[in-house]
Length: 245
Image (cartoon, rainbow, N blue to C red; front, side):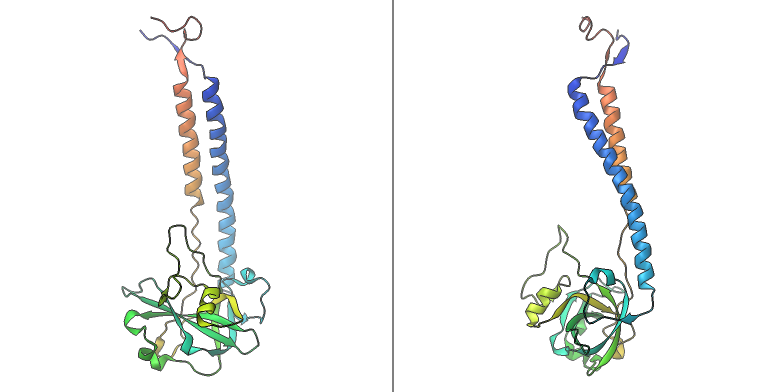
């Protein structure tokens, strides 16, 4: 018969388990803190997006402080130098987003403007001749910073006909343009003749999955602690007279 069992942890198991559980609890708590930080960030971004447009300064010392802010800028499109980004399907249609350099009239250099979506069969500028905007205009848009490629995401290939993500320095080098801003502007809808390119509704993609991550770390810590306790329960006679025959 199996005698009574008591919790008699070994030194090795304790030294391995206690730090691991402490680290997991720390990571879970860190994710809770991150969740609060992300919620505050989302609130600030929402306030920026819904603010009234203001003129974009000729020089931005801190572009990150302007991200998601509605702005106006005056100048002209360099229509013969547009580039295409692979876009998410829109209403079941595959297509592209049109990136066009915009030469500012205030001496602020060139800003790449994402003018929005066009279907695949309208990728050729000749098929959109009626949507071309010539001459000086005042444009309304949202300031955005370019996103880095993800760990498992393919990056842009030099010389490719289409781009996978906006990259102002690389795009400027391809177009042989100088004084191109490190940020871009997403044009708001309703500013293109004929509706193409369609412009971009203000979009904020800031997922807040930190609660899920915190629960995962806390769950792993609880599981490891339970395994430790159960695995270190021994017969009451073990360690005193040795295991019974």
